[in-house]
Image (tube, rainbow, N blue to C red; front, side, top):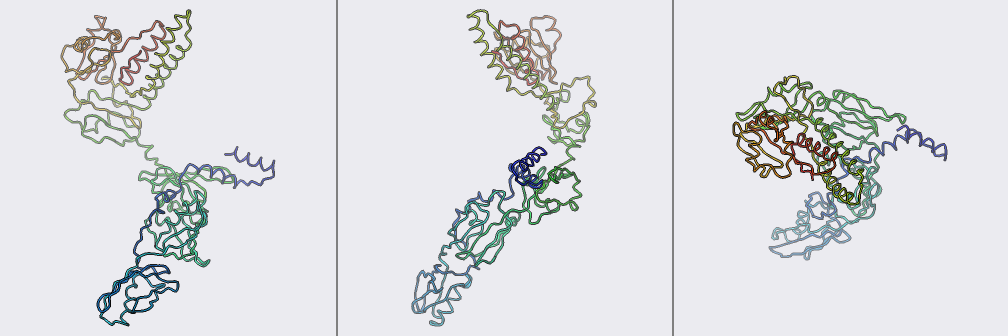
Length: 536
């Protein structure tokens, strides 16, 4: 901000343009507000101008050119649509001339009835109705997009006329200072905030030659944060209390503070107040206010997923541990608390960063590997294409961020973070086998079966299987590596109900470094995202 102000002052010194600090502040504030919406600016996207429906108004006054339907029956029968002439009269045969100009719509029948009864006493029944309104010519001017002369009906609303003129200019026109002028005198004023906030819009009968003038925007306050209406609001005075702004912005229930951003002599100043000071703090034109909830900073939002009979979202104090939260969860008879899992956003980010770093390293190796012969260069090119395709697929994998909870861990030492997810699995008698096997599937748990037994029941290893890199994922999320070629490894690993077996694929490459890198990345993805990704 200081740099911008210095630049403006430099322009003044060089070319003699007078720029005050206040003007610089206004230009900065104008740039800040470009990305924010003004309250009410979407109002004229409602196609008011396309609505031409006539509506009955008891207060409407008959005008020259209006059409009145009159029916008489009894001693005298007559039916006709009569236009009000330039002198404001209609003519009914055998009754004569009746002056109608300025008569209220609600008195239409009674005025005609009086004149008819002067001739036919009580022997004639009467029906009268205003059939059509004569179009008027209304000027729309001021801060609208397309000022001009527009055809309108006397019963049209102010919204229709402004919409015909293209709506109010963004950041320049006022929604609260709209005047109707007749013979150069203001006969009506409108504040559209009454319509926007409360749905109140008073009706007004226009006359030909009336002028709708939209005033200029003078004062405004920008509102942000935990509110239902994050807009720039127009003010009627250069100063307003925070309490008044709360009426406009509707802060959310958890709001505890508000932050005011002011520009004093071009210097940005930020002040923070508790919400209880809303009556004593006032805002000036051009300032910004942000409503914040420090309550949420002192409390954590924890999601509870899986098999339980509790809420799926809990608010707990900062510093709460896993054991305390688990004690508040109502478990069902199917909940398996021994296999509870904890997922954390920060861990998922770290896992993703580690995978991305290894992928970049692998990409660099592929692109910089040389070839001794032309034949070898062709082989390298084909292999590079396959590896780059693998890198593209692997980069889209999103790790889950699981924190493995060991049986020996004291759960009271695991301090929770905001956004943590606790997953309580359902008791299961299923063992899932995925990856490079002939028929990946889920099987019922069989006591005393080892890893090879479950793989054999899936048709055995596929030709692409890496038999030395089989993963046994325990129901708690803990991962154990299994070498199917090792007799000792087979005896030491026990498969339990709810476990998963992931068979990774082998990497077919003559480049030892690439083979090692891809194998490591496959392992990281399998552990972090529980996904068996095929190499190439």
